[in-house]
Amino acid sequence: MTRKSIHAWATAVLLLVAPAAGAQRTYLHCGRLLDVRSGKLLSQQTLVVEKDRIVAVQAGYTVASSPQDKVISLENRTVLPGLIDCHVHVLSHPGKGSAINQFTMNPADYAYRALGDALATLRAGFTTVRDLGGEDGVNISLRNAINRGQVVGPRIFTAGAAISATGGHMDEADGLSRDLMEKYGQPANIANGPDQCRQAVREQFKRGADVIKIASTGGVLDLSKDGSGPQYSEEEIRAVVETARDLGLKVACHAHGAEGIKRAVRAGVASIEHGTLMDDQGRDLMRARGTWYVPTIIAGKSVADSARIPGYFAAAVVPKALSIGPLIQASCGKAYKANVKIAFGTDAGVYRHGLNALEFGYMTSAGMPAIEAIRAATVNAADLLGETSNLGTLEAGKLADIVALDGDPLQDISALMHPTFVMKAGVTYRQD
Figure 1 (spheres, rainbow, N blue to C red):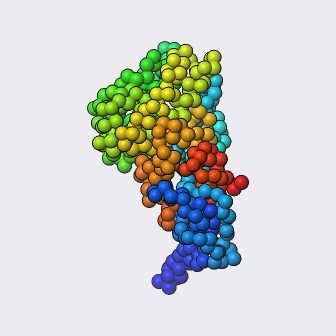
Figure 2 (spheres, helix red, strand yellow):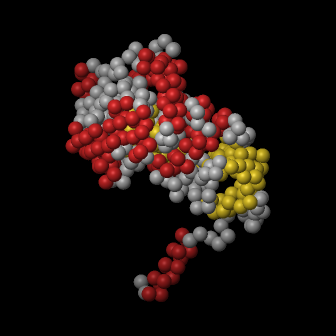
Figure 3 (cartoon, rainbow, N blue to C red):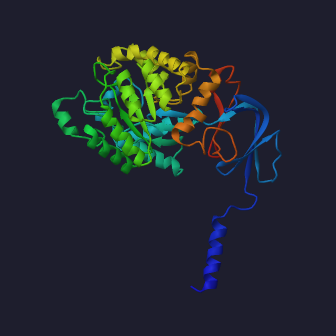
């Protein structure tokens, strides 16, 4: 090609990729806009959206500047940032006897079921979720399909498969017959000792994980008699954290028991999930080290309710499930009073997807003011995800993740259960 033809070709390419002058904008007229940083409701504001970003927040109702622009009236609504749930399981779905699903469902079955749950989550106002574990890479594939625009759902940051010790909370072979245990072999997410823990982190990184999830104690829905005992040494957890940090990933840690919580915090995890039996020393450690707490109160309440249904859970699960709900809620209240950083998370998949906002009511009942519960699902959650430049507030430059609802959630937190408008990255997915 001649220099002249190269210049002409380059100019043509630039014209194709450069934004057109006067690109279409959407003007959202907001009757009340919640500034989550200040906690104030601002009257008569306009959010100006171009492509996937907020480009301006203006006082008053701005008139569209071009015939191709769009105006959306939310003048009788309260508008706030898209909500973030920092603990979901996109492939899990509650149901009586669901423990046998691993023997009857294929990866494609999980994927198709997850499509409906993902849509329900998005329509509930949760534009971003952190998925903390699933099998067969389906959660990673779902994330990718949503990012490509092939299917509809919230923005997903996923852990891939959660890492566990042999016989630990995420060991799917726990409680099976000897023959089935042998068929399971040693899955890539089962790791013992620092070296295997490092390898397990690298494996999830290779498969495309955005975050690493481990379990430092047992849990409610596994077949252990007591979920409070530690299952990883501090040395093993530190190996996970250091390896993840080298790869640019944070570590979320499932932990119910006090000792497992303290080991994980000392080892440097980014967040403690559940934290049911957290003691004063654990709270002091978390506050001092800036470790996030993700309570998941709704999961505890839900499994306690389900445990009262005969045959819903295996016998070993029932007593743990019956006791867990009130303990998690009390732990959340104590953590808030101790100034531990709290991010919103629900363990969706343990209960039905789309009901995530029930957690707000449980958080306020535990002693958190409404604005603090909302911050947990916006600015705090964005901080935990490392996405403060994109998510968590309605400000110029942020992704246009926007939710509107009737009523004032600062006065009635249950208003968050009924969004009437949901936009994710500039695309409207709900407009009642």
